[in-house]
Length: 408
Image (tube, rainbow, N blue to C red; front, side, top):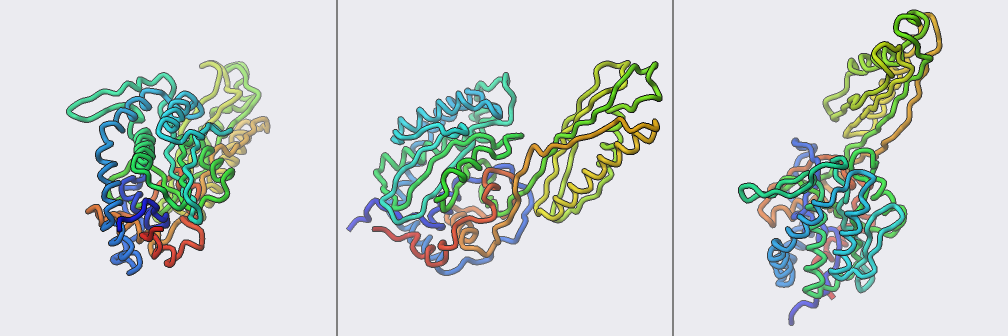
């Protein structure tokens, strides 16, 4: 008897999909040792999955859809989508999702494109997402160009390729009339890059409280498994003073730019641990009105990151203290107290880690092996960071793993 087209979704089936996907911005080095072996239930489930004629048929169908998928890739890439300006690309992506069978798909209040492919019931709900925005500003030439058999364009990899892969998976499932038990929530989300602050994926989890697991489609080298979410805090820092003429007011008023310069110098001297990797930078600066004016205002943006939250918070504390000290010193330099500073948190990405001995990490390792890839456990800051502290609900245990290859 042939297997019915009703695959049960569970952590192992998820990781099988992950093996072909990858995750973006991954660190080059390992953050944990790759499991030397996986538990018997995981290995058994994968053996059954890879032996399934239906699974092999689906994998072949994905390969066969490559050329068509590349056309989606070109079309979407050539619609610019800088942070907070994803609307046109969202509309094009929505049209493609509807054309491929998700007729009820829509753009939600945050700007995400969301479409639900219903299962037969009694299965977990799986989120499959790729982000619509790119890091490149408005006005960037996004025309796709081909050289030596490769396609080049700003944002074509991160993350437009993820969007086209998501559409390909949707097409293949529908063309082959695969009826999953669990629901599949297909999402093209906004706000992953720069100051988007994961606003899109945060809204998805806020509005869909019944999500059990997530596949985030992003580019990375073969075999990469993201099991650590790098946390980050970003600050906008504004210095304010009375300002004045560079000659006439000299010695009477402090300079906002000089105060900021003191702060930057102090920040530059801060030491951070190399493990867990913890970093900082003053990424942008601005201010002043003219070359012959004591600056009444200045501003800078600070990025702080770490693979663990404790050193991130400690570094943040030192940076904020350095800023306050710089203002005190600049005021003292001129025996005034008219320079002030304010800080605003403009980016807050949670950090966390999935342990390497969990079912989902072992499943991803086994999935990589099935495709001939050696697993590298690494970390990054992506949409997955939004829920990096969990991969599946507690019910996703070894028992759930054993059901991964079962059918109805």
